[in-house]
Amino acid sequence: MAGVTLRGVVKRFGTNEVVHGVDLDIPHNEFVVLVGPSGCGKSTILRMVAGLEDITEGEIATDGKVVNELAPKDRDIAMVFQDYALYPHLSVYRNMSFGLEMQKIPPAEIRERVEGAAEILNIMDLLERKPKQLSGGQRQRVAMGRAIVRRPKVFLFDEPLSNLDAKLRTQMRTEIKKLHQTVATTIIYVTHDQVEAMTLAERIVVLRDGIIEQIGSPDDVYNHPNSLFVAGFIGAPTMNFIPCRLTGDDGNLALSLPDDIVLPVPEERRSRYAQYRDRDVVLGLRPEFFSLAEDRVPSISPRINVIEPLGSDTLFFFEIGSSEVVARTPPLTGLHPGDALPLAVDTAKMHLFDAETEKVL
Image (cartoon, rainbow, N blue to C red; front, side, top):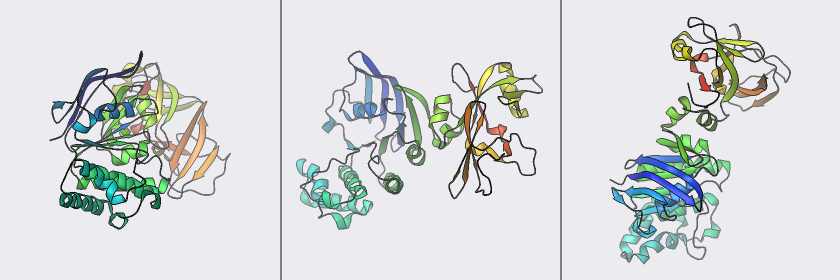
């Protein structure tokens, strides 16, 4: 049972503290994704788990054993990097077998492990090629195969798909998910791409400036963000944020938006928000919370600034006050920039954030 535990983990470079007392429990066989913007500390945390960076304070344990002082080779982990790090003069087979050869593992067992990993990754026909004869996606499969043959307790992935084009990234996300289903082991995956995080993770750890903002399943983080930062980072297009004010009384609570827009607070939300009456708040609406009003009375009728047809749906960009807002609707033609767009707003799914603390209300 190879879980990973971080307790009060701190990392300083000189006087600059980049990871601030991180606590995290990752059970055996869980796929956890660390996600956040550049500089948030996610790769530093991964490198500390791997032993490639020293820990300033705290403890990291694998399989219940504190590994702070263990060398990377003694931690029973395997890491897949962004740049593949393959030996250019060795064949695919030798790239995958080289580490096992250094461990003096019998040749028959090495062949069994390499061919087994190659079958999983669908690269059996590439074993005699050199890395320069491979595509980016094939090289990344080889790098993953090199990790699989070690049969480690923990896999660490450090932005492994960043060098691939969009189509290959989508394909490799599927391959990595299949890998986790086939090779039952713990995976810690680092990315700045929230789409990768949402599609791959069993749990997402959202980081900001070396601090964990939120931990939860993709559904929890997407539908129940606990801060304005998490709400804005997870989701594409990003959540819309509109400054507004809670007005009215307990029985008739409403949101007063710019441009004289008033949205009633749903009855089931009134008791939750009553204590914040007459306060400035930030309204959070995901693009899919808008729908075409059609025969219903529209909540808003903004003028369209930009239209982005995506085939499966259409994005409409407009403004409410000084805030740019995007709505996602089913495919729609016949409208042009400057036209009015009658939209209903699903306030039952809205989020409200404190304007000062940026925490969800």
